Image 1 (cartoon, rainbow, N blue to C red):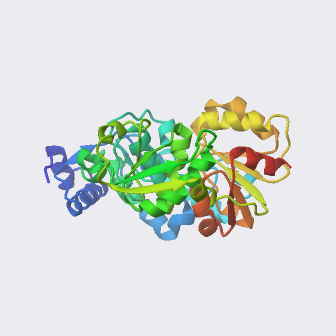
Image 2 (tube, rainbow, N blue to C red):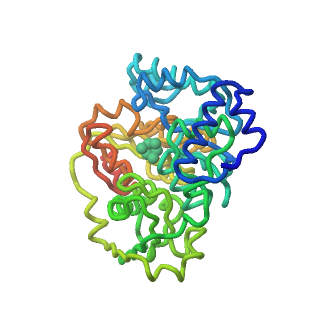
Image 3 (tube, protein in one colour):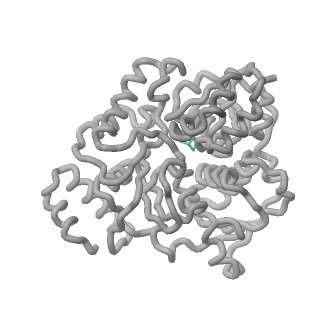
Length: 387
Ligand code: F3S
C-alpha cells in the first residue's frame, strides 16, 4: 500500500503509541479489502458510543487510548440525553457508566454531538470522502448526498478520526458504486409518507441484502429517502442505493440496468408492515428528526395534549436551531431529547409495545427494547399519542 512520509513517521511511533496502532488498524483493514492507498476524510461519525451496546470491555478499551481527533468527529447516539438523563428516568448506575464512555471520547477530541444524522451538523458534499459508522448515516451519505463512505466499525471510525484518513476501498471507489439489481415499485406513491418509505425499505432490505439497488417508480423527498435507506440498512445491509431521477448518481446508470436482476414491489408488500396493535408509547425520530420533521410535528401537536408517552429524538444542533418547533412540541407534554434514541436508550425497555413511524425502528425495537413494534404515519402516531 502506498504510504506518505507522515504515515511512515506515525507507523514508526513518532506520534505516540495510540496513533501508531490506529494507523496500523486502518492499513490492516485496507490490506484485507485490497486497498492500494489511504484517502483523507472530511469527517467521522463513531458508533459504539452507547454503554448499552459496548459494555465494560468497550469502556476499558476507550480509556486505554491516548490521542486527539485531527478532523471533525461526532458520536452515534448514546444511551441517554447527556444533560437531561434524570428527567428521562435513566438509572444512575447506567448514567455513570455512560458518562465515563462520553468522557473517554471527549478526551480523544470527539465532539460531544451524539447523532445518527451528522449531515445536519457538518456540511457534507457530493464526492466528499468520510468515515461514518451508523448504517443509516452511511446510507444517507452515499445515496442522498453522493459522498463516499464504507460502513465503518466503531474502532475503525475512531482510528480514522485520529489519523485523518481511511483505506481507499469499497464504496470510496467509483467502480464499486454501480447498481446490482433493479427494483420497480408499482404503486401510486403520491401520498406516501416517511412511514410508507420506511415500510418499503423494511421489505426491500430483506430482498436486497448487501447489494446496491436501483429504484424506479418512486419520487421520495430527502426525509423519505432517509427513511427508505435507514430501513434497508436495518433489514438488509444496504450502504448505497440509487433512485431514478432523484439521487445524485442515478443518472450514470439510467441506461445500464437492463441486464440486472429485476424485482417488483407493490402496495401489498409495503402494506404488510402496518398493523393496529395497542400501543403503550410512541417514539419518533429514527433516524433523528430533520428541521422539517420537527416543524411538521409542531404543527400536528399545536394546542393538543399527549395521553401516552411521546418521545421525539433529534440532534442537539437541530434542536437548538429549531427551538420554536421544540417549544410547541413540548407544550403538548411530548419530550424532545437529543443524544439518544428509542433503540439505544434502556428507558424504552419499560414499554411492552411501541409505535414508530420508521421502518428501521420497526426492525430494531423488538430485539433491542424487548417490545412489540407498530409502524404508522406521523399523523397516525400523533393521533394515537393524543387520543
Ligand atoms: Fe438513529 Fe437510533 Fe434509529 S441511532 S437510525 S435513531 S436506531
